Amino acid sequence: MSDIDREIMRVLPDAANHGDYLSTPDIHRRLMNTVQNMPSSKTIHRHLTRLEEDGLVEMTLRGTASMWRKKAGASGMAAKAGAMMNFDEALALQTLRRFSARQIPELVAEWLTPMFEIAETRLKRTNSETERKYSRWASKVAVESGGFALHYPVIDREQFSEVSRALFEERKLEIVYRPRHNTDNDRPKVVLPFGIVEVGGLVYLVAGTEGKANPTMYRLDRLSSAKAMLESFAYPASFSLDAYVRQERSFDFMVEKEVLLKLKFVSGAGEHLLEAPMSKDQRNTRKDDALHVQGTVMLSQRLRWWLRSFGPNVEVLGPASLRAELAAEAAELANMYGK
Image 1 (cartoon, one colour):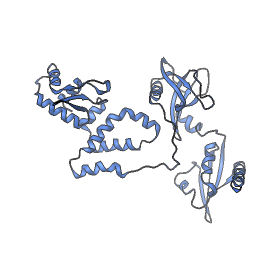
Image 2 (image 1 turned 90 degrees about the vertical axis):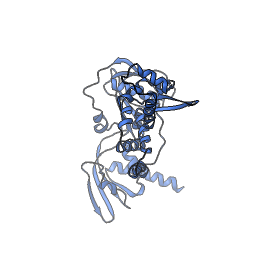
Image 3 (image 1 turned 90 degrees about the horizontal axis):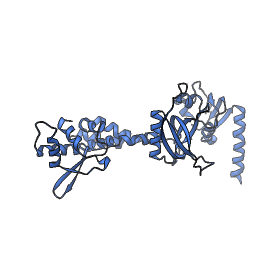
Image 4 (image 1 turned 135 degrees about the vertical axis):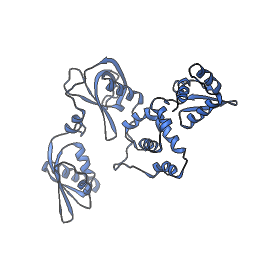
């Protein structure tokens, strides 16, 4: 981006603030007070046209006059990107936008929208066959989840922004939380935000409460309101979100204890565990047409859901208590479907 382009961007009204458009002569007059060796109005018009092609400014016609203003967010990184973005970078941004399907990336990506739009504009402006191949690349890649697709509750963007700001600035957060058993709750409470975690399509706030030793999890879609307070707090040096999630298994739903899980798979089920093990100490053996897998895992509701998903293609050989539990379930199912 040239010096004159930067000066033009500086004087242009911003669409994000609902600024009105300026004509080319008006822009030229404003620049005359700050730019030495001021170019002609026609030259300014050519610069504006290039900035529009780069997705940084927008133009409308009023009669025969071209009117201009800066696109919302077309500053900082976005402004630089418009002048310097190459096809590799444009493709990377468009791919990121398309495949960031989880809720947290989607919510955070809102602040990158101007750069995504510039990338889209850049890919559409092809000058050779090689560039046209780049522009078609995103349509040649697809990503699908291996699980059954559910429609998860939508998170309010403004509330997510307040939660994120309080978390980043280590400020107290006032929330009104409505859990399943109290959906009419309107009493606010003050929490200390420690982290945000997405698991199974749902997003949780992990937050502490003054006077309590252990943090609490709050589903963000159940927040009725959220407001970052001015008062800060000392983020606990002893708290590790990674340890909270991975070691304490706090998102595994009703965690019980570690067990040595022994499984027998048939009909090709479980083959994926040879490449994506269920535990670090996993051992695999084959007997006849069956795959036997064993490893130390955390007994939880999530583990039970996973085992049920294989239906009759997995047999739990151990621990005995889990085998008996699933056998009783199978008997109930047989009775239900046998009627």
